[in-house]
Every structure is written in C-alpha cells, then in structure tokens.
Image 1: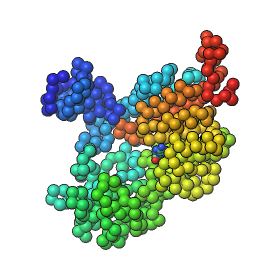
Image 2: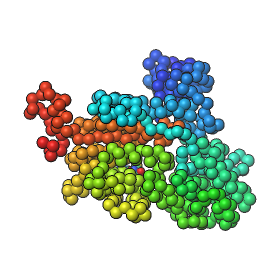
Image 3: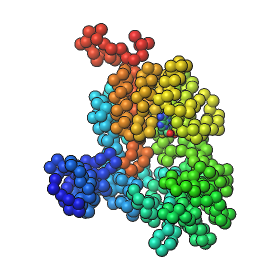
Image 4: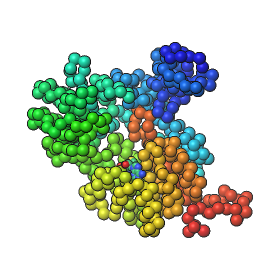
Length: 495
Ligand code: SAH
C-alpha cells in the first residue's frame, strides 16, 4: 500500500467492523471507512495508515448500496453517536444478527447453530442450538428515556447546547436528538432562555469558570413523568424559582434538581444533589415491576426493548416457582425482580453499592421478599458463598459488562452445576469466549436471540440459553465411543 495521508481512492465496501465502520479491501489491505454501508462504492480520503490496515474518510458515495438511506438527523456524521444512520433499519438488524452469529461460530466455535425464521419453529425442526430472529423495534427513533446535554458558549458568547463532536469537547448545536424524547427541545429552550434572561453563564472548561455544565433529562415512558437535573459548578443557582416556575408547566414534570459538580473533570454528574421541586425521583415500570429513578440511578435507556430482552431471559430461565436463581451483575436488580415472581428465591450480586441500594429499594416498593442482594464482585461473592455456605442454584443468569465474565466466576458456575445458564450480553465477542468455556465444561447452547436495544448504533444485546449436556444426549451423539470414553456432564446427579 503506497498511499499517504490525504490521498483519495475508490473502494467498494464489503463488510462492517463491530463498531459499524464500513470495511473495504485493496489487494489485501483493509480500509475502515465510517458512514459507509456494505455495497457502497465510495471515494475516500486517507486519514491514517498502519501496516495492514488504515482509516479513511468518506468523501463521496459513487454508487450507493441498495441498503443505503439518507440519515434523518442533520448532524449524524459530526455527532458520531449513531454509527448506522446511513443504513436502512432492516440492514441494521441484519448487520447485528450477522455480527453475533459470526462471533458465536468463529470465536465460540459453536457447531450446528441453525438460524430459524419464525418463533416456535425451533421446537419442531431443530433439536440442537437455534438462532432466533432479532427482536427489533417497530419505530427505531426516540427510544431513549435519558439524555445529557452539555451547555457551553459559541464564539460570540451565545449559549449553546447539543452534542460533543465525536471524541472532542466541541459542542455541535443540536437540541433535538432523534433518539431522545420530544420534550428535550422545550426543556432546553426554557433553560437557555432562563440563563440569558438572568445572565447565568455556561461552564467554561478551559477556565473552570461559569455555572451551568450539563442538563440531564429523563422520562418514564410508561408513566409520562419527567425529570430535569442541572449540573452546576457551584452550590446555588440564582433565581432558581423562576426556572422551576417555567419547567413545571411542562406536562409530566415531576422532579427538578441540581447536581453540584465543582471538579475539573469529564465526569458529568456530581455526587451532591439538591432537590428543588418534587420528590427527587420519577417512577417507571418494566413489565409490572415499578422503579424509582433518581438522577444518579442506573436505569436501562430503552425500556421497551429492555422488557422484551428480560422477558426472553425469563422464558429461557424456565421457572416453575421452585427454583433458586442467581442473577450475577444484577445492577439495580431489574432482572432479579423480573424473575423473583416466578422463582423460590433470587440472589443478586452487584459491585456498585448505589445500585445495590436501589435494587433493595426496588424490591421493597414492589413488595418482593424472596430476593437478596450481595454487594461485591461476582467472581468473589459466588465462590465464597459456594465454598463456605454451600449455596446452590437451579438457574444462573449473568448480564456482565463488555469485558464479559471473570473465569473464576464461570468456573464456580460450572462447579455449582445449575440446570440452566442464561447469558445476557452486550458484547458478542466476550459472549462467544465465555460460551465456549461453558460448552467445554458440560453445557450446551440451546437458544440465541438478539435484541436491538440501541437502534442506529452498532451495539446489540444478546440472550443465550445454555443447559446441562445430559448424559443421554451425550451418549446419543457418541454412539461409536466405548462407554468408558464418555465423559459425563458436570453434574454427577445425572449419572
Ligand atoms: N442487569 C442489570 C445491568 C447489568 S449491567 C440491569 O438490568 O440493571 C452490568 C452490571 O455489572 C453493572 O451494574 C456493573 O456495575 C456490574 N459489574 C461490573 N463488574 C462486576 C463484577 N465484577 N461483579 C459484579 N458486578 C459487576
């Protein structure tokens, strides 16, 4: 490859990287080009080159792919938040399914994973592992219940809100993100007017001066309740009652608060909260479980898809009311509480103490008594409880962060030998690695189903059901082995 920075070239996009950049090849050299779609023929400009791959910028689409659409958002390319806006929604779903399927087959070395077209088909046609159709959204826009807007000033000193241009702290003015709720626009306009009227300055990062840093807006999609939290570089917002007066007229406004963040930091929220209107939280539901969400709580950003994903996890857990279930990496207990109504007992494990407090509180407000939450690392709590206290599990659910499960955690799951493991994952590469680990130790994959929680971005969630490889199944597939060569499944009770 003998091109240098700023040279232009023509290439056809053949594939897509995991983060949604198009991939084109020239004599074995690989180009990553953002904002392109598989099937596009494009002119691109070299940005950076390495030995076997390089990054280029899309200059012009010469021949558009049939899967290409015009991005709806005027700042889609500058913002970079939605990597897949140039792809039709149907193509996006296909891309995500393929990504997960390929990782499971290539990294996870899963054999015989059959793709089925319709629900229910799996039971009659496919005795082995099935890959079910992705759960998409009917309308993949305005699905986010949470938005955080930075507040700053433009060259002329005018107050601006919008988004940081990809990987920078330059604010692109854009008050209506198409993934967020319509109310965002009105709330931001009100806040800007208020600041202008009372000469309240936006925060200036370089000088660590000015007052208003960010606005956090959340909406309970089921309840319609709205929350606004202003992050300020100080303890007092002058004339706050005027702002409250304006905001509370917006339909659904339930909670208004200030978050004090006087540090020089990229972290958005400060730890101190001052509630200036309402109870300090909003309420929402996932399924029939109620949640109180404060400005600092973790809460899933796409509640409609979260419900679909957790219903799938619940279905895969196959509960009858008698089971002991462990929900590892439980966050605020969303899955735990979902399962608790159908299980004998649910134990949750989570590393963030605020999340555990929220999980306990959520159990309380729902009157759910058969759950218990442990604060700590899954890879420490589970072995400890297993070795010292002899705890057991019929079903283990895991929903780890991107890096996947710690090996010690997986190893303890194998030792405990639950009948089923339900793996909820936001990163199919680590999912594939962990699934391989379990499959080498007595489990087999039964079902895989993706869920499009973060439409228009490159991310995808997946729910996998693994169950014990029963000795009967094993003998069936190992008929030509001598009986003593047959390695039993992990759980000796099957012998
Ligand atoms: N199921 C949860 C969200 C899971 S996100 C829900 O719906 O609310 C992953 C969670 O794992 C985060 O809450 C994170 O704080 C937690 N976590 C990360 N590493 C962990 C570890 N080693 N042990 C336990 N929890 C961990």
